[in-house]
Length: 280
Image 1 (tube, rainbow, N blue to C red):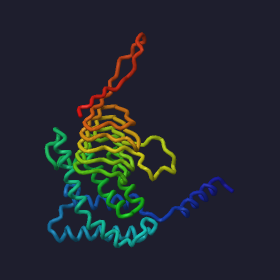
Image 2 (cartoon, helix red, strand yellow; image 1 turned 45 degrees about the horizontal axis):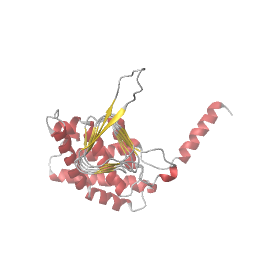
Image 3 (tube, rainbow, N blue to C red; image 1 turned 90 degrees about the vertical axis):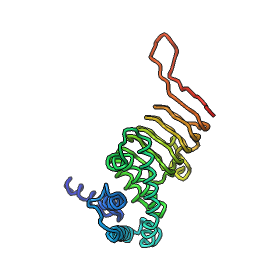
Image 4 (cartoon, rainbow, N blue to C red; image 1 turned 30 degrees about the vertical axis):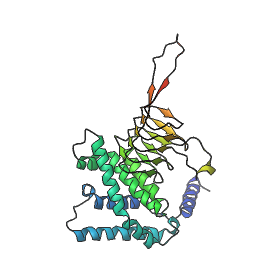
């Protein structure tokens, strides 16, 4: 058989075996359509009256029903009921995102307005995508939540798994390179700078159902480039984690951990070190 025919056979088999699922473009259109209703800064056109808002919400509810109806493998429940439940709870997501906007505005001296945060901050876009995706995941929808957050990841460089549990007033400053793993638990009023990783230590595939990522309690600030790993790692409330810290064990509340580097000196047996200060 000719090389080209073998190539076409491989592609044909791949298409036959691919499960039905919405295209990334379809999911992107759904997410950005919903975001445009919630935030006029993202709308293609401003909605003029309450009836138009109601009509647009109904339009996207039908869109979601259609996606779920044509892709039965995405849910174990009735698609119309799931879509309706999602839009009933969307008001809670809207309130949560407004709190996030407040946190980002208050947490960044460079922010001149909340409109600036919404229109231009990658942290806003990534967190909004997470909140919407997380609600879909709570409704038992598979795959689509991950597609939404990965779309936001591709635009912002911020990777938040929809399965993470994140509290109120969440602030990501700058954002590029932030990673928040699937089983991460984040409390209220937590602030992350760019390059922060909340990740897992190396685990086996069969351990997927256990908590693999850290817990960050309320009012914690984590500066740029810090890496915190492990499901048993708990960062106590009101702690401050300095830039470039590598942390795989728990610390008590009100801890301050900084990474201190030393200039290389071949005549001295020195190494990089942590400075640990507990204000509790």
